[in-house]
Length: 243
Image (cartoon, rainbow, N blue to C red; front, side, top):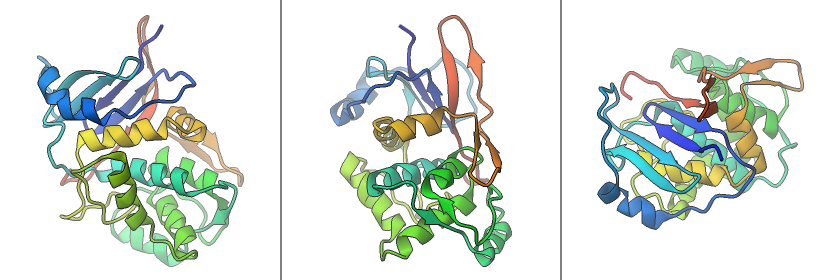
């Protein structure tokens, strides 16, 4: 059986994923620092976490509980929270022209979806993850704002529910804020929860996706690696100068 491996540094790498549900083992998270070793290789990343989720085995870790700026890995939390909140991914939302202009001024990564155009939540989730679209993140926020729900508040509540104790989110996009932080252990819990959803697994494993209006999305992770023992199908990257 092929292994399913998560690798966290400045990116999430998702290996070949069986159609199954994953149990979140917070006890193993709390014990992992006693059971993992550091890699011998020279790495640029100050923190990393490598997990074989086929057998819930933590392979390598360095400072996986250290506070760090997650940048666009924040969008994994946005994805997970929307999957938890929404009963119908075929509801519609949009991002306004002014909101996109504000994101451009902040040098945010964009999916370049149409402004003031209705998209399904499903399409917005793909636009959120594949090209790391901050415009899609804001469109998702708009959906919940119209229903008097603050999506960022729900993200923090979702992290508490999963057992993450070293995260605090200020926005849905990952744009830098000094008080916007997470750690690799917490992000692992988020990914394991995403994998419980069929749609979540498909999004993380998708390389290209065509939206209803014909826009073709491509993953910004650029991950497509295969050998005899391991297949990498997709993932999520994150970058800001501070992160």
